[in-house]
Image (cartoon, rainbow, N blue to C red; front, top):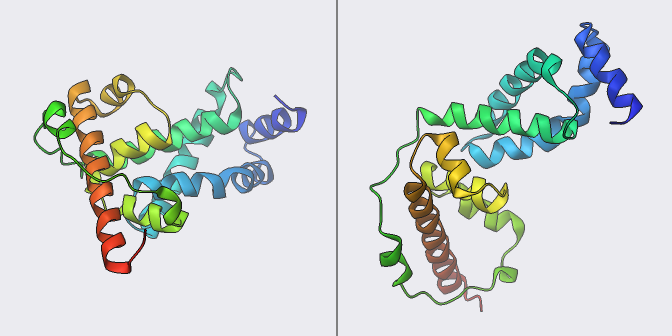
Length: 182
């Protein structure tokens, strides 16, 4: 851990407002992007970000330095966003993954879409599919870990992810058809 990071943590632990502000300034913009992936609106993302940093300051005494401060904070942000969404999370009935694998869709070339277009399509997914897609495809969690975090079974995580992929593929096909891409 860099010396300045250690000093920043010490300052935060002592209640130094300047150190707390520096920590926030150093990580807030990156963590805001994470919040946006789990929320539907900017105001909601800002609320999750603020709640997350309150938790960061309260839990900073538990930071052991085993991982980078960035990843430690990111984990708190993700957990806060998940807790925030849990009350809204409606999981669709489990779909048999083999049934989904039978679905034939034309592969879509992702390079045809800007990052903003892809992120917007992800944000339009149903909340449960969006959360699981973000955790698996973007954050890199395994279905077993997602199941533990969301208190669902692993099969539900897999089926929601498959559903999200199918919905995204459908959105891309619709966009391609409507705007003549490809």
